[in-house]
Length: 227
Image (tube, rainbow, N blue to C red; front, top):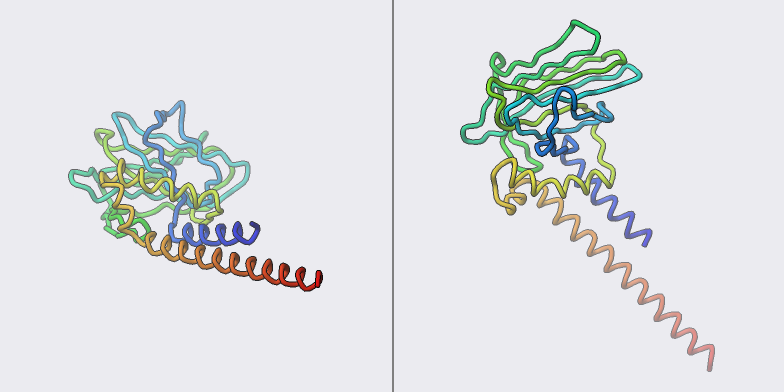
């Protein structure tokens, strides 16, 4: 059982490493300025998938020590998708703020190979900042449509996060990209899933054969002892 658990962890970690961000599906939450989404471990690479529905979305980071703040936003390349998103980053009790303005930046398109989806990307914000509370607001002119807010750059995929990633992918395909469930197989994940499953089958088969061989020898030795 311990060997099986080790193999499972190894395979899931390999699956997770393929994705740059831990996915966070946030579009069903009614987050506001007074009730923001609290970002834990902001240096860990996370992607917050949201859908604006008439008001801006708010995120908040609270840190007791200085940290590396990384923020970026991408939007899916979909028909009629808005690209005029604005991200405002402000430290509480400070007049200084930073804005990533999608109406001014030259957006670049890119293909995300892990899940197999096309996005448009804005320039990033990356800075070592002091301790404090940081508020991040995502909006556009009419506060409508879909985005993915990236926070943090340290890639970390323990087993739990790898499992969450696999669970989140169908929801992303269906509700965020308006695709069918089977679109999950468009990206590189199918390769890693196939390799992982084959690897697990091979290991389990070897373990079963070894156990059978040990039992057979023990049984044969026991019969000889009786004679």
